[in-house]
Structures are given as C-alpha cells and as structure tokens.
Image 1 (tube, rainbow, N blue to C red):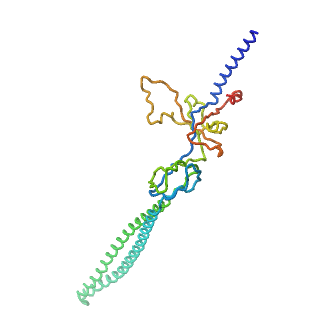
Image 2: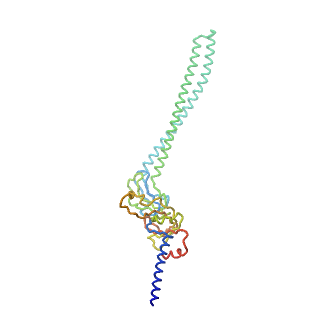
Image 3: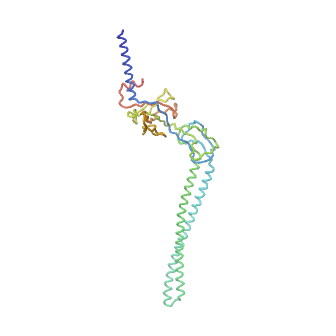
Length: 337
C-alpha cells in the first residue's frame, strides 16, 4: 500500500508541476491584463454662438442620430446681423454700378475731347500759318491755340477722373468682398443657433442645461458618446510588449457582461508608459529609487459590439491577446486556465 501512496504523491506532484508549467506557457502565449477600460468617441457639445436657449430637444441618456437637432439658441440677434450684412452688400454693389457708370462717362468725354483737341490743333496750325502770311490776325491765331490748349487740359482732367474712379472701383471690390464675407459669417452664425448631433450616440448630463439659460461660445454643455465604435485601452506590463504587435487577435471580457466575450484586434501600442504622460512624471534620480514594472497602454479595437449589450465608457475589462506560433497543446489547454 505504501508504494501506491508514493505513486499517488508522485502523480499529484507531476500534475501540479505540469499545471504550473502550462500556466506560465499559456501566460507567455496569451498575455492578459485586467487593467483595461472601455473607450469610445466622445464629442463635447458646445455652441459656436452666444445666446439664450429657447428649446432643448433631448433628454438625459437619450440615443440620438447624426444630424438630429439637440438644442436651439435664440436666433433673432443673428437674423438682424444677417439683414444688416446683406444691406451693406447691396449698397456696395449699387456703388459698383455707379462707379462703373462714372468711368464710362469719363472715358467717353475724354474720347470726345481727344477728337476736339485733334481738330483744334489742326485749326491752330492753320491759323498760325495764315497769321504769318498776314491773311489772319494774330489775335485769331492765339484764340485758336488757346482753344486747342483748353481741349488738352480737359483731356488731362478726364484722365484724372478715370484714374480716380478706377481707384474707387478697386476699393469698392474690396468692400464688396468684405461685405460678402460678412454675409457668409452672418449666415454661418445663424445656422449655428441650432446645434445638431455630429455623430450617432448617447447624450449624457443634459440635465445641466435648461431652457432660458445663457450659453456662450465654446462652453461645454454636455457630452455625446458615440456608440458606433469602441476600443479598449489595456495597460500591459512592459515585459509583455515583446509578444504584442498590431494586428493580433484579442479576446475581451467586460465586467458588465461576465458571460459574454467580445472579439478584438490590437490596433496600436502607445509610445510611452502611462506615467510618462502624467502631470507630474516620476523622478527616479534619487537615492531611494525602486524599480517598478511599468505599464504601457495598448489599444484594442472591439470588432463585434452588440446593441443588445451596450458598452459603457470607463467600465473595466479583461483583455487576452493571442500571439503567433502557439503550440497546439497550449491552444488546447488555454480555455481551461
């Protein structure tokens, strides 16, 4: 009977040793961590204009769809600004037509004066020649020369008028461009008085806002949590990272649903340990330094979110990554550990 007991003890020791060996092998090929949390896209709903809230279309924790109105700000002040901007644009456009007419009129007058000057200059030359031959008085020749000079002076005045009107036209173009920009901005501000959902998801903490409240530009009103894509931020020990690479499959167990497993895929590995990005990173250049295994965030995409099992950001999860070149017996035993 003694040998039977010894054999039983040997069998138990062998089983325990094999179990310990298998456990460590499985840990190597299936690195796992329970320091993991659910994340999703979060949009902080904030207005781009200031005003009174006159309508609130959603309630706390309501599911909303992309493009759905969330709240409305009193638009009257922005409607008046749009009317003012449109009036200034119309005035600038009318001024453009007036300037163009002035330029055309000055050019026509200059053309007519050029014709008159050419004729007057010929008459002056003839009068000068006749006066030299005493067929015409010197006074008449001087009058003809004066007439030609008058037309020449009018041409110079016409050129100055055209030049000034052209400068006014350039300034008017700039004014029209500014007025058009003002109209565009006024339309944009008016459109921003109604805030729409930028993504599909769930709104939260809406009860902080009430009809009648005054909200300002870029004021965080409430968060909109997207429900179309989720990922897990799993904080793995630095000693596990040599076996974890983007593209590897992962199993995800969320504490909210202990009887359901989600499928995941490694997307990326952070460029630094979590404490490297903290407000006060640790200072290790001291005499009492103790080496501590650091944890590095690994992003795991959830491949099969289920609307019947909605995930909540910030909740805990356990992530197990499946590495490559796993022996068959390890794969067989992994579900039992």
